[in-house]
Amino acid sequence: MDMSVTSKLARRTMLGGGAALASVGALSYAAYRRFPLFFEQYVSEMKLPILPPPRVPDPGKWPDKGVHSAWLGHSTVLLKVDGYTVLTDPVFSDRAGIDLMLFTVGVKRMVAPALSIRQLPHVDLILVSHAHMDHLDTPSLRKLESKATEVVMASHTSDLIRPERYGRVTELGWGQRARAGAASVTAFEVRHWGARMQTDTYRGYNGYVIEINKRRIVFAGDTALTDTFRAVRAGGAVDLAIMPIGAYNPWIRVHCSPEQAWRMVNDAGAEYVLPVHHRTFHLSREPLEEPLGRLLSAAGRGAGRVALHGIGDEFHLS
Image 1 (tube, rainbow, N blue to C red):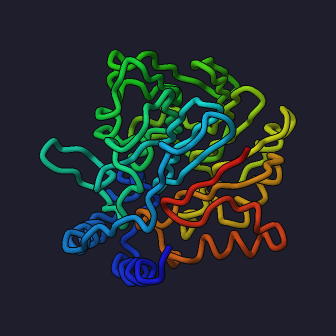
Image 2 (cartoon, rainbow, N blue to C red):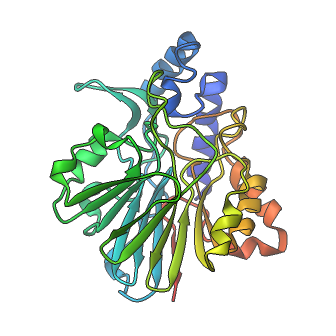
């Protein structure tokens, strides 16, 4: 990310202060107790423009062989593995929150997605980790509807989308596996919570292992520190782990710190890590640059295993 964009984001981050929410799913978890602060942040954000992405990836040039990826913002990653395309937690809206038809009440994004939905290639598979509004964005999922696209999502969450408009929608609980085209997807336990509103605590929340040919990729969704990634390693080598590294201050019980993310990457035996869940929405109190800086410090001599650093960056494995 160029310094001009970074400095603008840093100034913007200061505006929210303690009004930031744990997750936009936390409209049900914390905002109802802190509505005055949330409203203050909402009003202040209305005046701020959404900055353009620092880089724009070009998936049209990606070959069919190998693992190719681009971070589009927050937890949205575009993957192409041996010609098969996967999109994780697609959130393309200006705000992540409650959709009230004419407008959305929720946290405003600081940086636009690196690609718009219209710029995406055909998507074979959409993965949705859980129902929080910064991960399951109903306006985005409506725009992505296609009978040629499959969706794998957490248990008790498919009622939030229109399954009949996709080729197939599969809900998975921990330890369950589904076949989706060329991909085999296994859900595993993470440490988070799944409720979208205050009362729907029955909704699931997953991490996923995606296997395509001999490639294995982990998408952790949202998680605090947990030892469940060790079981992922037992299943074989992991080429790439997509790991959240932000929103841990003060929400450390449900979001991992960068150091904890690095530990779980190593627990999984992942060769590379693609850090997400930072720089896009103001969800917590840590400074803008802190998550990535702390991850690189934790990695030390292994910092070369951090696959990309900024929104719009691409990473390729032959």
